[in-house]
Image (tube, rainbow, N blue to C red; front, side, top):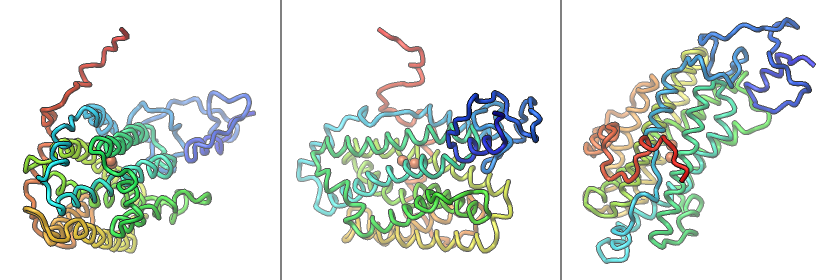
Length: 373
Ligand SMILES: [Fe+2]
Ligand SMILES: [Fe+2]
C-alpha cells in the first residue's frame, strides 16, 4: 500500500500513528509518482508543513531554535543540588514576619502548579501543531525543564516541611491565582478540541493566541512578579536556597520566552495574513487583561507590603514588563511605566552570563564522557 500524501500530512500535523503495512520508505508526494529528492531547508515551515517530514532535523532552517536548544542544555541543573539548610533554619526561626511568609507561600503556590500547566500545554497543545524538527527538539528540552521546575516545588515543600495540600491547591483555592490559571487553561482546552486544526485561518490564529498566552503572558508576565518577590529575599540574604532555585528558573524562563518570541514572529512572517489589525487589537486586549490579573495577584501576595516592596510598585513593574513583551512581537507599548526594580534587569542581564551561577555544584558540560563504573 503506497503511503499517500494524507499519511504524510497526518504524521506531520497530527502525529497520529497510522499503521499502514508495509510502511513505505519514501513518501509519495505527487499522485503515485515517488519523490526521492532530498529536502531543501527552505521548504521547512513552522506550522502546516506537509512538504517536509518532521523527523528530518537536518538540514536545519531555524537556527534560532537550535541555539535555544543548545543554551537550554548548557544550563542544565537539578533542584536537589541547591542546599536548603539555611532556608530551613530561617523558616523555623522568627526572622520572617507573617507577611513575609505569606509572600513566599503564595509564590510557591502559584509556581508549583503553573509550571505544570506550562508543561502540559507544551506537550498536549503546542508540540502536535509545530511541524518542524528543530523547534520540536527545543520543545522536548523545554518540557523537561518544566518538569525540573515542578520538581523544585516538591523539593522545597519537602525541605521546609510545608503543607503539600496547601501549596498545591492554591491554584483553585486562592482566587487571584485561580484567575491567572483559568486564563491559561482555557487556551489549552481550545487547542485540545478534537476538531481543532491549524489549517484553517481561525485555527492558526487560535494557535498564535495560545503561544502568546503561554510564552508571552504566562512565562513572560505572570512569572515576573514572583521572581521579583522571591529574589528580593535573596537580596536580603534570606531564603537563599529558594532564591538560587528561582535564579535558575529565571534563567531557563528567559530562554523559554526568547524561543516563544522567535516562534511567534516566525509564524507571523510565514503567515502574514494571520496578523491582522483586528487580531493585534485582540492580543493587546488580552495582554492588558493579563496585566490586571497580575497586579491583583501581586496585591494579594502583599496586602500590607514588606521591606522594600508594596503592591503599588507592582502596577508599574507589571506594566513595564508588559510593554517590553509587546514590543518584542511588534505590538505597540501601552503603558510607558518606569521599572521600580532596576536590580531585576541586572539580575536578568547577569543570568545571560554563563558563569553567573558560581555556587553550581555539578558541571554537566564537563560530564559528557560517561563513566559506567
Ligand atoms: Fe518553568
Ligand atoms: Fe517555562
